[in-house]
Length: 84
Image 1 (tube, one colour):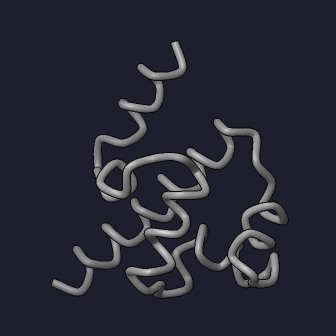
Image 2 (image 1 turned 120 degrees about the horizontal axis):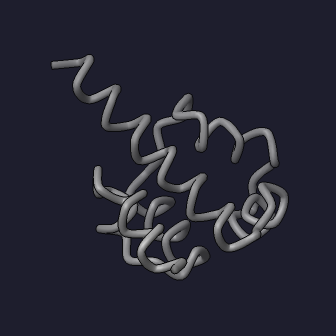
């Protein structure tokens, strides 16, 4: 069970990173918007930090994306379609 949760956490972290990159935002930009250090933000994208629901919602707002899309395992396919 823990392995499945860890895999899902990594998938969400990867979705956040991909969305940030598609928007051409830097880690520094998101970190500043979240009032955290770039290092702390980097740990979010790497899946090293457990984040609160509030932080996830803030990230989704900054990235201008629905939080459900960040939680989606199919997220990368959705983003590719939107970018075309």
